[in-house]
Length: 234
View 1: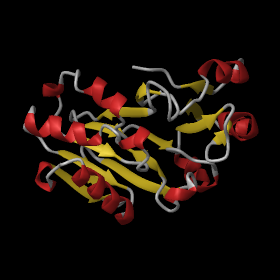
View 2: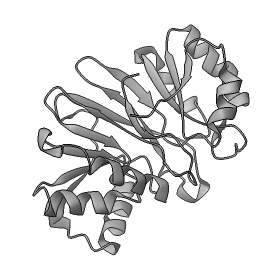
View 3: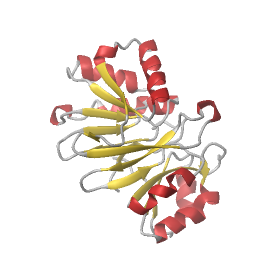
View 4: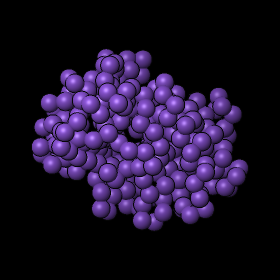
């Protein structure tokens, strides 16, 4: 498992789903920044990192609730600017509004729409993938295909379908998938999508489950199925 996770829980959990990775040049990339992530990442030895990036999947509170605090902490305590990477211009505008409501000056952070042809940090390429999730955020929910020097993976964000990610599967060694045991609708229901996940694992793609409403129940469902695991916490 390439990504390291702060949490793997659904929206009302104590530890919300959010992950991170570090490049060989010591750039720290966060995938979303809920409040539970901020409370953990601020206790890192942050002096050992060069630049800070946050990729946003969508603007639900369990994904961006700690973003403003993280920006303020980095600016005032570390004297560094966070670069916030938005998947689209629309989401970028919403993030700007949210951060302004929270009292953040635009000079405290960098905010840009991701360019798939550009490298971020140490040769990291990021391609946003529009997906279906909450109807209230239609056309504003994204996953990502992310590629570095020696890694490449799909991160679905919150999604109710695997279809948008299918074109990227041939270039993917790992996929991190949002699933729900008891609640489907705007999330993938685990038992319904399990045949598709098994097929991916049989194609030598490591499948990791995240954003879980019940970890114990999910573990029972995937018990003894090779190639499918629940993400572990750092």
